[in-house]
Length: 425
Ligand SMILES: CC(C)(COP(=O)(O)OP(=O)(O)OC[C@H]1O[C@@H](n2cnc3c(N)ncnc32)[C@H](O)[C@@H]1OP(=O)(O)O)[C@@H](O)C(=O)NCCC(=O)NCCS
Ligand SMILES: *[C@@H]1O[C@H](CO)[C@@H](O)[C@H](O)[C@H]1NC(C)=O
Image 1 (spheres, helix red, strand yellow):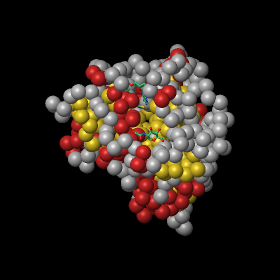
Image 2 (cartoon, protein in one colour):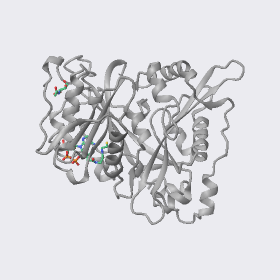
Image 3 (cartoon, helix red, strand yellow):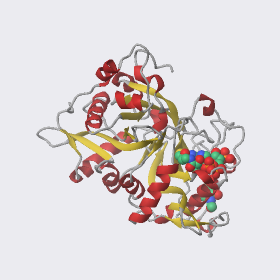
Image 4 (cartoon, helix red, strand yellow):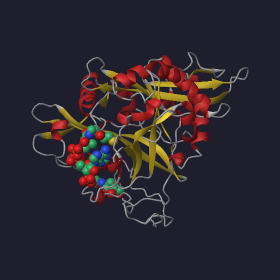
């Protein structure tokens, strides 16, 4: 790997197991035929980049002609015999436990099946219950006879701004089909059904991310990994020591301080919501693709949640003014079939706002905070302004990409990772 060797000894074989993507180079090219996606209102491969959109003529805009709720099919899509739709009520502990089990055993794994995302139940409840969400957008499939939950897809509402145009959209996430039911075309049924349910609320656009190549990415971001616990990462096979690197040297190389360095850095509290909303709104305005967050959403997405979300603000001494923001979330992965280790704890960079403090210092403190709270690795994408600072902070490049997609929205001009101001969980 290009970044291997002496400069980033452990980055040698850093795996993106922990991100949704891990697809080697051979898989980063489009397939020759997409039986499902070629029928959907998404940008297709082979289309001219600067095409003209039916709706706006500017090249940016909806792909389908405008529809109304009355045009939308009222009945759910048909399922194979012995399967039924069931909306998941994640406020119910039992349903949440069932969803947690489905995802724990069947959600995203790396290419070599060494790691699998292990979203905690608390994480799922937080991720799936933001303001304005609807139970029918937490769309499950159960076996009719046993009632076992075997497939799932979620949508949560999010106002998005794309190239200056603001729209209500949904973020689609947690698409999962039980391993025994794969390759039976259940995924397209889940996608069509959630689209129908979203259309019924007069929303016609969605945003989603995936590691796989589908028609057609609006942006492609690269994962980077910062080793915090080299011994553990080597033991579980997440990374390996480069030639001439010893464990003792690696430990020294990746050691971070014990306490944050930024004066006035403290955990975010509820009273900070208005100021954090202003900070985020100002910062996100500079990206081509970003959510539009009001106070209610900021309260939900940004306030700390124990063992899930970690958010810090920088408060200026004397004035009490909030100047900067930093946040990351915790996403463990199961280590599959290992003699001694069962799980790996990763921190993922979430929204940060550098203003009076350089991004590198904010991220540096994020590493310290993540390390001191038991995270083994810190992951970040090269979105926002991250790209230029990751290497200096001893991040190594991962082997997977994360692709950003828009449903029924064409962007005339492909986006760079640095155009993206959106993090999906
Ligand atoms: C992703 C998953 C639900 C797909 O189900 P499957 O049984 O493998 O595939 P199906 O036969 O039902 O459907 C295949 C279609 O879904 C598409 N598809 C596969 N993964 C997809 C994804 N992540 N997002 C959107 N579409 C996807 C395929 O491209 C194909 O459509 P095409 O014919 O147009 O190419 C399943 O493999 C799974 O649960 N994997 C583990 C979890 C996971 O990776 N989730 C997605 C996270 S982004
Ligand atoms: C939902 O809307 C999109 C965009 O107009 C359309 O392509 C799709 O067919 C609609 N689906 C349903 C079930 O109405």
